[in-house]
Length: 587
Picture 1: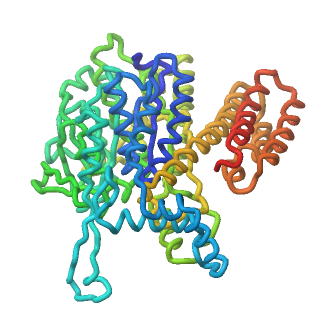
Picture 2: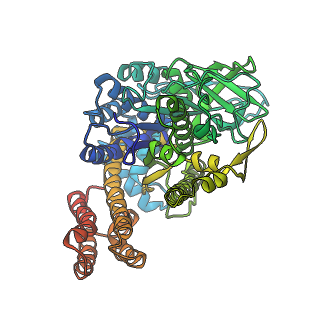
Picture 3: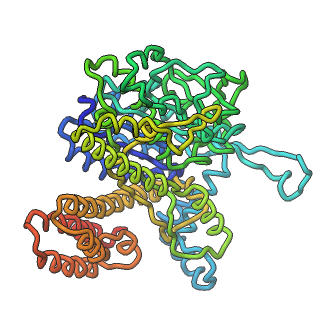
């Protein structure tokens, strides 16, 4: 794999946590995989896959498939096969889904009592209840184990069983799909796996497990590398040493796999030998699990218990950006000694790949209705708790990318005018930003310029809420529900990709001077009725979609644009019309 260069970028996947809703990610991956495969010239589809909870499990299955085959080919089918094995029928399935008499009886009861759930919601609720509160559990996921307590002698709680879950079945099932431990290398062209977890005794920052070996030995106990957000800053101080100090990397050695987290006053260091099944479970198991990972903290000498990373970062975009930035800053620093002529900071930036990121979110951000009963209130609270919070991270990443690219252009322009000395003076000036590494440390403008990740595109696929919303949906592994989620994921991903294709296409046309920003905004508004997933799912019928596209098509064809530019603007809408026609009445 070619490393570095102006056109080098890395493609990343980010999978959110959400239990059984992870089937939706298996559906979206079908479309993301096809897009990446169509665009790839060398078979390199995904360079980084990051996940939390069920997203960590899906990510691990994909990376495991790649390592087994040295190729992404068939990874889409492998993920579907994995979910096929997680499906589990329930008694409610037999009663409601396969027995029309029960369904008809229930629907008639609803006529008499409007507060009664419909038959499909009842099927889902009682299936969830069976999985969560009967010893059977879900065969390839968990066993449900009742426990009794008497802490407060409360007759309403202490004398009724509460349930914990043994995830040994998941551990065994996952090991059939993945050859653990997972260890990958950039030099071998292998993808990177990042999983997030949380230490329940110090949740000031996430715990990140990385399939790439660290490029330096673990820091000594008093070697402060973390800022006050728990981010490893050991590679951020990319100061003038890079341009002037030939020995800047002499003390850096390749080390082991470890995660350092916490803050500058309370730091933790845990070691692991590549990503094993215990690290996957550390990212995936919630509060009532019986199989939480326990890892020794080398700094404090204590044993740490790790829970589902979704409690702290359910959409690990920030962890992805930090890990990407830290690794590449250090990788480039180490390789300085291998380069005969010292590169300028602008040349170094070009060697650090931009990121193109696909994010799949499972918890809806904009549900339509106000919940009116306890079941829906609890479900809404769960969605709020675990929903995606990375929109600001994305915005900041885009802003820093623009800042870095603009600064690079200005530096190159100044150097071309013979102002290299003046530029170096400006870069070496103290910046207003202060990085806290154990104690306050002043930074330079050069540090700011070189210490930020660049992002080229973010593709978001957001699951929308369905009328069958039920509290505990993350435990609904019934075949009917899982297959619906996979189908919805394929549908949403295709529309979301088409929508972003149009937006990125307009951005390119503006950058090339073919249209103005005002014209671009106008086209987006004209296409809104065609490219909005929510409109298609909640309101618009097939004929309405076709009518909206034809109106949009007329306006585009009437514009004074080259034919190939018109095709860029029309193709996404055309594909959405075809998709709606193909799936009409199925969703």
